[in-house]
Length: 440
DNA sequence: GTAGATGATTGTAA
DNA sequence: TTACAATCATCTAC
View 1 (cartoon, rainbow, N blue to C red):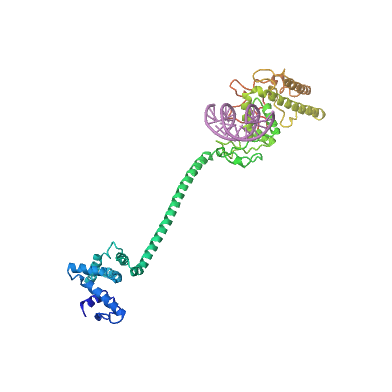
View 2: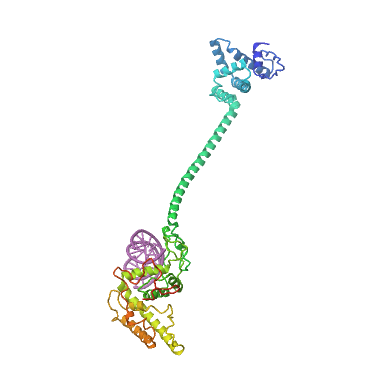
């Protein structure tokens, strides 16, 4: 047994030439020369190569370089490197496993150094297989090399493809994620705006109404550009409101009860609540309030314009009152002469005479008695007074001194008989009554 | 289309 | 909390 065979046998017990190593028994020395079969010739060839490799370190530098060059050019070099790398991998694992306990095998260390020196192994080469592939690529790339290492390249390509695919997926997901984040930020910004806006209008919750005149849009606050569509009150409702207004011109501030009753008469909901600084549950302000508020202001702004309207309503009210009184008188004369007034005049109780006649006199002092409307109203009033005086009733209620009260509006533009603005309920009116200023 | 009428809204003062 | 005053927005008649 020669040195070469012994060395090869010590290489992790790998049978490079197809012979087994059993019980530490040495392989038979490789036969020199071809012995007729290709397998034997190849074994001999490999044996020669291995012999050269193992003895290369014992030779001079020039001889080693020459042998190295010859080995590099050898057709079996890739296969040899592959085998060597495989050996190294296996032995490397075993060395790492037992490094703590046993000193490294000098033979393996020598192999390691050799591979390092050849540049086919080491930390930068990434392992035996890669080193083998690199070595194969460096050897010139013969057809054998391509066949032998194509699987590595294929795997590498596959890994690269997988990597790029995953990277692409990741970038797509990342891009989508960032887009989603941007969108979320955008939505968040809008949501914040909406939240702020809604907080702003949260207390003054939008007016809503159960009135058939109003649509679902009424549920939206004005800040959403869903300002409730305005619907004019019916003619009948306007007449009822005007009647009340002009019959209470000295104090056109209906009480809550009056408002409710007016709302019922006008078929106007009372569930409407002012949009701001008002609690929804408190049904205090209504369309009626809006109407009276607008009416007061507009009346005050343009008294002359509303005077004719005032006279008309006063006449209407007077006629109604006269009829009511006449009916009451007739009733008294036939049934019970001691009861002067039934108090019913249709829409309301007997209208406030003071306000009624106040309409006949201009609020700025001009007399309307000479006008046609005023004369008409005056004749109605005269009739009424005549009836009342004949029956002996209402001597103090419709006396000449109470027929004309002072101007409705004082110098400050406020209603003289009106209570302070904070008081909605008329001071002289009891609960349940429509009148707010019967004492006038 | 436009002007006036009118109901609703809003800020402010008492 | 209310009324006032200004204003908005819509309706209606022309």
